[in-house]
Length: 310
Ligand SMILES: Nc1nc2c(ncn2[C@@H]2O[C@H](COP(=O)(O)OP(=O)(O)OP(=O)(O)O)[C@@H](O)[C@H]2O)c(=O)[nH]1
Ligand SMILES: [Mg+2]
Image 1 (tube, helix red, strand yellow):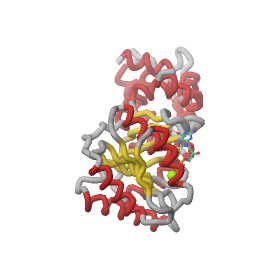
Image 2 (cartoon, rainbow, N blue to C red; image 1 turned 90 degrees about the vertical axis):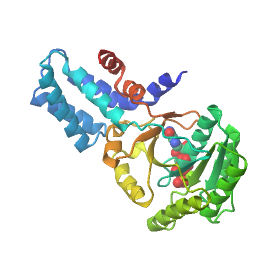
Image 3 (cartoon, rainbow, N blue to C red; image 1 turned 90 degrees about the horizontal axis):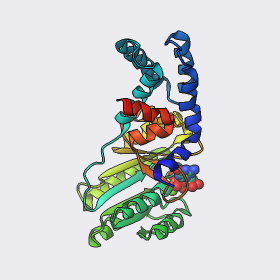
């Protein structure tokens, strides 16, 4: 199955909650009145698009319908607005450094280790040599878990002792990546420490220690968010952005949730682009975020039509 078909399958629940419900509201010939807008509002909120983004989308829809003067079906206008929003959420892949150092952070259980495993496979698939660092020294089984992922993709793992200093592991891994001339270093971090303040301090320390070895590192800090938590994840995310400069978001577990509407609002609420989306437990279940592809999976076939008409 190609990536697009796999995405479509992963987005099924969200598509049912968003794309199909939107289509159901716009019965043929229906005009854009308050009753219709109120029904749309309910659909968008239920798919976890979020209050502000929902209001904004509806205001944009009204404005574009007004400007269009009834030439285009309102459903198509709404789809265009949604695609635009997704485009704004898409970050450009930044410059690649050598080694390209990627710090992966987030609260416990969001999918950090899994994402590191998938990213290792992703970069390897692009012909890059990869080192992964097990800098989650806090949770007992974390090192073995990453070891399994590293073996699956055939990349090198650098780990320390359980309970050891995570910044030291990251430092050693960077040294190893430099001496082996590796292209990419992926650093898995802990999601939980004794308390939140400790976790944030630890992340700051990790960045600081990496800089001692390589001034420009880390080149990316990816914040992993569990899409099933919907809008609640946003508040967690805000704390991380205070502790370390986050460069991109990874939304995981988009499969199995109807709350995929969060893709529309998370980036604007945080001011950070979405870089990757995780959609399963397999090593290939990760894709760089791409507005057009994702719009079609979120909304169903008519999104494609909307795009072609642009
Ligand atoms: N369905 C689905 N499950 C996922 C996805 N990503 C991760 N998981 C599952 O989520 C659970 C937690 O994943 P981990 O990668 O261990 O999460 P973590 O953030 O490293 O967790 P801690 O290290 O404990 O903080 C595992 O059971 C994963 O298989 C995804 O995209 N889809
Ligand atoms: Mg982990």
